[in-house]
Image 1 (cartoon, rainbow, N blue to C red):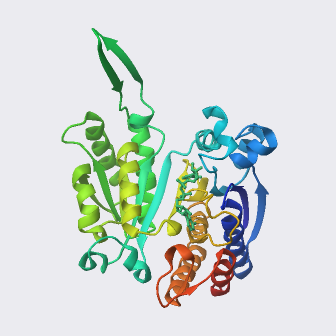
Image 2: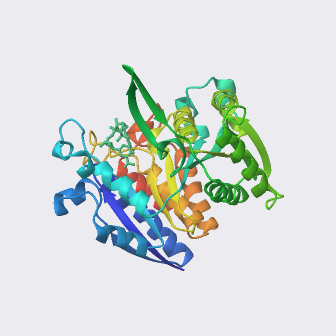
Image 3: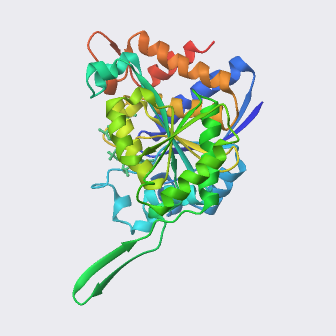
Amino acid sequence: MKLNIACIEGDGIGPEIVTEAKKILDKVALVYGHEIVYTNVLLGGASIDVHGVPLTDEAVEAAKAADAVLMGSIGGDTTTSPWYKLPPNLRPEAGLLGIRKALNLFANLRPAVLYEELSDACPLKKEISSAGFDMMIMRELTGGLYFGERHTTEENGIRKAVDTLTYDENEIRRIAVKGFDIAMKRKKKVTSVDKANVLDSSRLWRKVVDEVAVDYPEVTLEHMLVDNCAMQLVKDPAQFDVILTENMFGDILSDEASMVTGSIGMLASASLNDSKFGLYEPSHGSAPDIAGKGIANPIATILSAAMMLRYSFDLDKEADAVENAVKSILKKGYRTIDIMSEGCTQVGCKEMGDLLADEIN
Ligand code: NAD
């Protein structure tokens, strides 16, 4: 199979971690007989330095021409970098928001996995963390409260602010379909999270999710109120497979689920549109404090590349091989500095990439 991948190295540790992710993809291509064509795309600070803007039309076109986008991360030290003296619409983050919008990426996927070997990093009690967990938070990314009409007024000396939460059934249906499709590739369970006891938008959400579920008889669907879900994530995270939810609830719950794993360098993510196209990036930022030191953990980016294989190219066997390589290397006791613990062997970014590539045969 030919894989056309646009590569955004970005800023800070971005080039280091993307180099290792490409190393893994190249090894997968070699072992499983695929051909990969990479196109480099500038975004964020790297684009500001060359073009004066964080995102160009050419960058958008190059990303659109690819089958999928692999990204490191963008941005610099927000207190010292000259990029942050620019007006907000010319800063690195504006490039990221711009490309997500231009590519119509409405579905955000954030897996939260507790690896047995890293369970000490989990802040939950041993009796809860020992069960491990492997969930996918599926968040609607382009609708709801963050995109609704808003205004601030003053009436009779009283300041008043209004935000509106709107969803139409098409917006709900397309994310629900993605959620069920992804559950079919996993443990076939969807927990749809809403606030249907209070909000009309949630009552519509629940109805449309029920309608979509009819087409997926193999998937078990449950509905859960968002406040209960926030509690269940720390009480019994092992119960979840796919959590399907709207924009603001997903923003909060995905951060909560990530933190429960305790390891920022391990957290992958993907944003998809309604075709197979997606942008795959680690959940963490560009870590300017460790950029260029060769110590960054490349695993979040490598696991994002595995998601790309699974969700954009339907290469499940290849994705499994990458994920199994990560588990195996952790089991062998290799760790980057951020996940280091006593008795393990500390390795740098490049060595971790080499070790993982060697595991894929
Ligand atoms: P950060 O995630 O970059 O770093 C937080 C801490 O985690 C730092 O101590 C860093 O060294 C460590 N860390 C992060 N990733 C690591 C890795 N792979 N291996 C080892 N350690 C790692 O968050 P921040 O410091 O708040 O932000 C830095 C820059 O990143 C800012 O400019 C911010 O805007 C940007 N950012 C970008 C994205 C993105 O591109 N999607 C996301 C978040 C933050």
